[in-house]
Amino acid sequence: MIHELKKKGAALTPVNPPLVKTLHSSDVAVSLDRVDGAEVDEMGSLVGEKQEHRWRWHAIEHRTGAVLASGFGQRQDEVFLQLQALLEPLGIPRFFTDHWGAYARHLAPETPVPGKRKTQKIERQHLPLRTRIKRLARKTICFSKSAAMHNIVIGLFVNRYEFGLFIYYYNIQI
Image 1: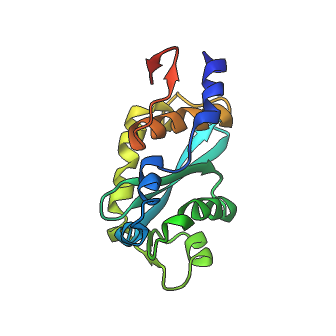
Image 2: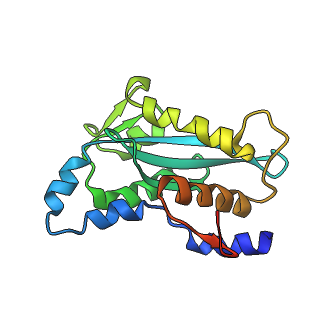
């Protein structure tokens, strides 16, 4: 089963395809204007007998809460820059963030809006993930043995429940 899950890792997508498809219509300017802001945050978890920290980076549309993009990595500026590159085609004018330094360093000075008051939706999305995926729960005995499997399991969940994509495993939806 692990071998089959690893094969599914190649099918995972870091952006929300249904949303991106709507941006390729003849009325792109209107679609881009609708994404007036994005909430960006990172959520920590542990891998390899709780030795290595992994972070799920994600961005949601501020008004609707739709997941725009998601990725995995360390809590470093380079990983934020990868997420920012995924969001660039959407033309987002404002980012609602916490006070972590990477946002201030890599976003234009007028772009970030730091503070917990504007990031409540994205912070709220951490709870269902931690509830449904035991390897994300705090103070648990469940953890991923490898970063690759950690990314695949969480990526499958995000692709299914956030992006609405079905990835089939032996003709069974997961």
